[in-house]
Image (cartoon, rainbow over all chains, first blue to last red; front, side, top):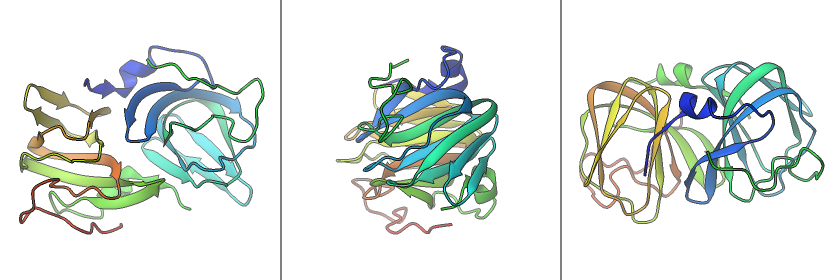
Length: 119
Length: 119
C-alpha cells in the first residue's frame, strides 16, 4: 500500500499508446498513458472507460460529436459507444477501466496491448 | 454524455465532508469532496476506495502508518482497512468507489451521507 504520484510515474516511460497500470481497486485498474496522433475507432462491449487529462489536450471523437478535454477534465465513454482518441500534441492521461478492458476494444491489431505492465 | 471539469464542479459547493457525485462508470461513482479537520476511523467491508488530491494536502491515517498526499497523488484504501482522513487545511479531492460505498463505512452517525447529490 503505497501512494501514487502521477507525475513521478509518468516520468518512468516514454512509449506512446502503451497504457501502464499504477493501481487496482475493486474490479478496475488505474492506468497512465502517453498519446500522440490518432488511435483507431473502437468500442468496448462491456466496459465503461474514463479518460482524465493530466497534461496537455485530448480530443475524443465520437460518432456524433467531439469531446475536447484539457487538464483536470475527464470524460466517461459508456460501454458500446464507438470512439477514437486523437492527440495533436503529446498528452498524458489517466484511465480508469475494468481489468478486462483491452485498449483497442473490439478490434485486434498491432496497437493491441493484451497485458499492460505495472509501473 | 458531457465532460467534467474538476475545478468547475468544485466551485459548485462549499459543504465539508459531503461528497458529490460527478460521474458513474461500471459499478462505481466518481465523487468530489471538500474536507477540513478530522473525520472518523472507519472501514468499508466490501469496497476499495481511491482518494486523489486535486488541491491541497490530505493525510490518510492508517493503523500502522500515515499516508501524506499532495496534489496529483492518490492512494487506494483496500476493503477492510481502518482509515481516517485528516486535513489540517481545506483540501479538495476526487474519490472513486463502488456505488454501494457509504462515506462512514461501518459506522453510522451524524457524518453519514446516505444518498450523495449529483452536481
